[in-house]
Image (cartoon, rainbow, N blue to C red):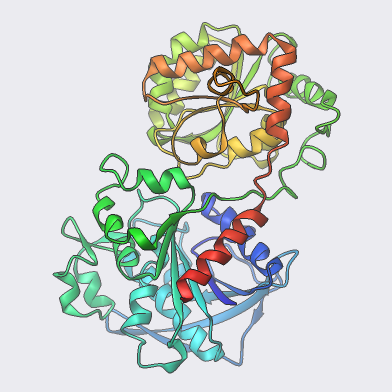
Length: 484
């Protein structure tokens, strides 16, 4: 199939979160499945054409794209996704995309992505290329399905073109004043037919839910959760209307990057057959962060955005009890000030137990995965999650809340053992409260002292395969259904 993959970020060009990892990896795997994929991205100020060997597409010239009744001229640059033949098209409009960050709180945030949605469609027109599927991702691309069906329905190029929309996090809905619909030149009736308005605001995300041919999200459990009032962020009823067109596909990970056997970011590589390098990485990291090394003391890692969604309110309520365990902690991340302040206080109070580093450091993130014995992810909700999958590959036993992708990827050792199976890969808890968290944590620490059991849990996790090829096959099947 011919697939236009549209996203607001993708590694290695621009990243704020997991969407970039998906957009940088899935198109490559789709190509391996035999599809022809073109990736479309905004050309942000940070994307340097020389660094990424981008070519200005002189043949397309300047393309006028109308937003809010004003024509903005865009140009297009072209590159290749590294280690693939996937063509990447960058929508260049300095007026909208040369900003201080990818996403802003500027007054024209709606216009920025209105332009991007329309510019992708108009670029496809200028290329005279007919995709079978336009695969849109998150709210920033959510208007494309409606625009294809109505505003650009006059162009026979789009006859038979199907749209797929992936929700990576329903918490971000692209909400703006109703006048955004007029800026996009949509039919007035949509402001009253419950297709694009949510709680009195125009919603890019709701528009995609209403008009995409197929909708999916990034894990099976998260797909089920979004149908409930607790997790659906007000859009559960809209999704329920599309139930026959709705599904969940777990994200994959790139084992070319996240693999302890070949990881260039860690000093000691190791494998399923020889885990000795893991202990050396632990000793190396503890020395680096000025914590004492003791092989009998477990090291717990956290690499995360410090926000309530990631369970940091739960951690905060249980912090004193968690610090009472015989364990050490290494934390990397940044976010809400109250949680950053909490870790500064904990580091000061427990200098032999905890070290925190704020911001994001890719090398340190890899080292934490390789050195830690346990990885904690107590998320309130987690559409897919990647760090728990990295942890499994690195023999770092995850302790997670049983939600979203965490529930789909981590199998509780004690729960399975009770049913006669030794296939568990970690520890999980369901209730979102401090008791449930500390209970799961306590179980993990007790098993850590039994080296034969712990080794079994580590090896179970390391043998799991969450590579992108399986996910890409599932997307291929979804595309077939969308075309039908």
